[in-house]
Amino acid sequence: MSQLKTWPTSYGPIVQRKIYANLFTEIIRQNKCILCAACMAVCPTNAIVILGETPRLTGVCIKCGYCYYACPSTTDETFSGFSEELERVEDRIFGVGRKEVFGVYRDIYVVEAPEDKEATPEEAVIRRLMMYGLERRYFDVVGFPGYGEPVTKYLLMPPRGRWEAAACIATKPEELRSVRLKPLTPGLTYNAARGALEELVSGFFQGVDPVRVALFGPPQHIRSVWRMRFSWSEHRKLSRTIVFTASYFYRPVYSYKDLRAILSGKGINIDQVEDWIFHLDGIEFIVGGKSIKVGFDELDGAVYKGFKTINDPTGEFADVSVGRLKGLDGVVVITRSEEGQRLLEEAVDKDIVRAIEFDRDAVLEGLRSLYGGG
Image (cartoon, rainbow, N blue to C red; front, top):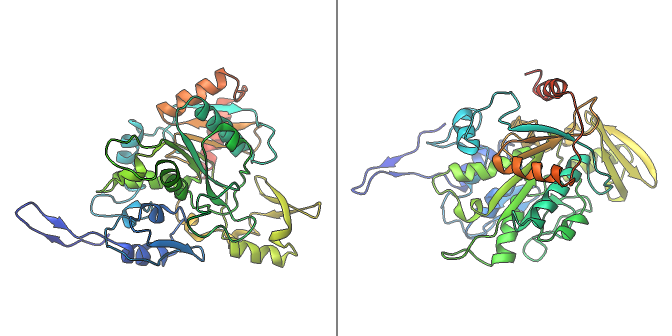
């Protein structure tokens, strides 16, 4: 971690801040970017745009440094990273420290996988929880990467291809019910929070209650909101907006152009893919009514490189984490915060999701195995 220059003044020391140039050098150029779009979402001049699956500076940079201090892969003079400061980070987020390798947890459930052709089993469970949260007004809007109407439809570039995920929002349960939730690409998750602010509030100023956003996305993306809150600025405009987070157990997220190239080599035109199904060992693509399964190892060259730099198999910093384990019927739900525990308990009590009996020791071992045996 580089030492920052400090200037003494009569009002106290002024510390040099890192800016987009540092973000580009340390993260983007080093293939550590995870395309969460936090840098883009916090930029006060809208100077950052995703071009060619890379954050680019296309407008006037005022050198505020907000982009750098929103990126979950950066460090600074007070924050040396999620791994290095794990105990402090978890205590600040959850109020307790971890007792298991898969992170802090309050309880573990196994629920039936809902029948949902438009979602993976994980997202199908999260969909039901988020719809219930909207009904109960625990939050005002749900932001997610998926295949609904992009929040950037009238603001910035829409997704380039049919299967490139976009940041979307839903303000009513029925809006969330109909979207497709099987993202193959990162989806620029934090544009959803930004879109909620710009579309629903049209600004943020003293005296106005911020819109309350529930966000779900890949484990790596969930870290961004905490990085914002740990920064010197706290990025209050965005971080106060996000009141609840959900994530799923790790699965690969792909570069659209690289995935397109690999599938093309197997005789699959990604634009002709009608659907796909995530399995624990690969993805089954449906093309022309035929099923073609491709193993994760065969698709490894298309994995978005930044995702390989963060090891988080279970969404360790989300309020609720959802996923599947080999040899287990049903979907595992880990509640990590009090808010997550309350939502899950209510959802189970009201049969929004149906809890099933399970061997707790077997599930604990399965979770530990995601970390190489713990």
